[in-house]
Image: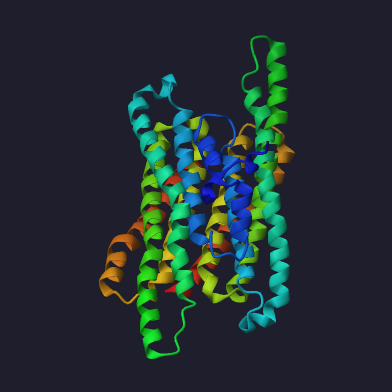
Length: 209
Length: 209
């Protein structure tokens, strides 16, 4: 059974345990999904309200995107676990002989890149959902403005957490092209996502104060 | 049935819906519980390792505290919903006559303070768990250092999210003593919690870079 179909209590208890999965990657994906769900909630509390009639279509588009991102992030909770298990096994491979060393090294390199793939996607999806909350600061009902703030904070946590799970693996990856790509494509997205989250949060806080 | 005994998918879908609960408060509590569970996980991955033998007792104490905080935060997911429902009903009370206005106003004041109580506790519990991660930067296995970073980011999000749910209600509360107490006791804890989280994260990032 997929972990996301287990109860919230089971997931959090399993996370706390010493089992290899779920780990930081699954926590990142679930936290991102929670933040994305709040974008849909804010739209749901806004649609049909006269005061926001001008944003009706824009808000429907925001929700359509949020529903898809939420689904993607929820799937990543289990996908990250599947992608991480081979790496956690590879660590245990023998390295007595030269041949064993070579095999372990090759296996590790393949598994490290596989373990990075979902965390990279978590960063990208969280960034996309942060952009949705940015729109909701103006287009969402002011009565739900605190939920925009909560959503953004959860997504900021998801984004950084995805990144941490890239960082811990990338130090051991030898493929220079892969590392260059991560540094050029993903690293700047993390910085942009944090800056954007902090801007959105400052606006929300000002509206509440 | 308690929401936390429903599946993760159900919780996130309900969060996305227009239903009054779960809302931002439940999201805050669950995100905080996820961050706290990661402290237990890091201890679980450290106990018994020779390299960290000196911290064996300290780590066991960290885990005992983390288990309790995790349980408290998980309970708050449902408790926040229970405490929020009366307020969401009070908004709908009639206010045609002077008598109705008086009753609505009195009811609202009581419900607003009730709705703040769990968010205040979320802030306090998340702060306590952030302090546990602070210890784990040195006492936890370096192999799990990214999980300390993820844990801290989730707790930072939980702490701020709890605070946002205090802020949105406190603007309407007239009890001056209550507001003074929040400003003196809770507001500084939020600022301290954010500063501490950012310090811990900077250390984790430096260790991974």
